[in-house]
Picture (tube, rainbow, N blue to C red):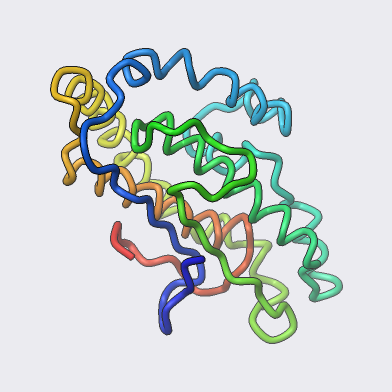
Length: 211
């Protein structure tokens, strides 16, 4: 378990860099190998998979995490039920493992429940003390500057993933700088989702790729 450090943002992500040669065969066929686990992910919220219009919408919607009922619960009751939090945390962890596999960050097939090499933590909030009851109505709007930045970061990340595919297939290596960039984009996305959609914090996400 990776504990949150004092002063850190209440949503964190790190992914272990794989040492040694990568699996060139599974990398070559990654687009096909990821399909079964994507089907499982889609069945948790098929509408989001079939009707999504953007990568950001996909990130925020897939996995079936609870959003609108949570907005109402915080607004009218100032409560964040523990089981809703546990569900959201489990689904975000699962979807992030799938994303890491698809992005060639790891070779092990994504588990539906084990942490593996993807370490993701979000802090359970005290809704009475830590959350403003009105902010959930506008957080999605306040996060618009992040959506714009992430749009361009996703384009860069896609190019890097394609280059990484060639690098792994021909050399067996994923350059560390490229790896860190993709993890940084995923980390940034997580923080924005934690603020605007998971609603676990009122602290505005920082504009950075690092921890």
